[in-house]
Length: 452
Image 1: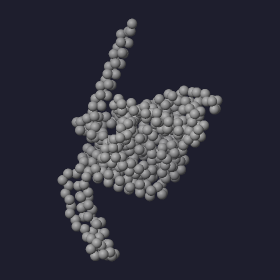
Image 2: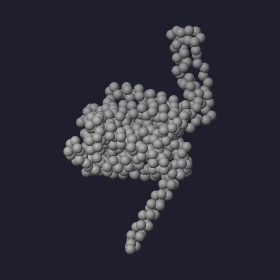
Image 3: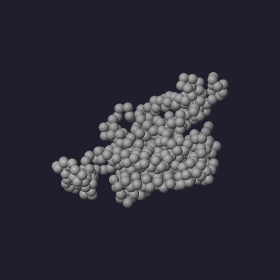
Image 4: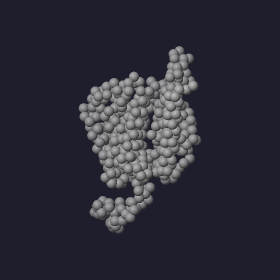
């Protein structure tokens, strides 16, 4: 016979489960209500990044991972280096849409701010737990890490965005405000990081992490998500918000066309130095630019978004190349050239994806990836946990005669003899990633969407 206390505990437990189910249903209904605000290209890109994350956390031989898939020790620009910046950019893109749908639902700014704070705290706590279970040192809690960095960036940048909205500043202006703020902040942090020199030992970022965080930091020579790095990543999130503002632009109605007649001296009288100067002056002056912009704002709204993304991406790429001649690309401190290069790539990529998935409405073969993107945090944490549990299993290798963790054993005994040591870890990760992606079909089959 169960006691009265046990019965009460059971009742409370079942009630809690029922409450969670009810909240989940409410959130799904809320998301479906504002499905029209979802940007398919953002979900697709987030899904691609989640799949790449699965690949990175599913390596077969931790000590023999290909250099391309390891975060640069200090200066450098590898594929692995852009993963976290891309997640920050996508998070930034989502902020304007998150605020918009909650505001349309009738929530006041204070309610939206509380919701953002709650989400940030949850992500931060998840990061602390993740650092204990899956990162390098399981003996200590790592206070800074990828999830903690994301949480702090999300909270601060969301509050800044809401602050500008309270000032009645429109998305068109916010695009350039956040780009300007991001550039200024990135330059300041870059100067601070390299003021004593570009070497790892002389960096202020490294010395601050060692003196402040001490035993609560990464065991690496430079913490890739250290204390100052957490804040120097803010410009990346700001650039993401600027993309979100572009994609969230409303058509400008009743915009009057400013008439301006330009000269055509070369066409009418032939080429000469004087005619060239007259035509150039006719085109490159304040009235001419005003006329061009007034006509530009009357064209198709989607075309404006594409043009804006491409032009800004091109400008950032050029600036990253120029600044990169003097300042090193550095993921650990999020140096100015690194930030500009990552953002330039993202502007180009989201431009192409927006054309494909939001204008052309390409849907074939993309639904699963988008669903993975909608469950990004849930998928990443779940797969990290399952991989960690599986790898606790130890099996004796027939080649080494030693007991190895499952991933090391499988790679050593079955893959390494075929591919060699250089590619073995990558092949194991690819196989496991394909298996996980196939299993993630269940998300789409059962219409599962779990987001923080």
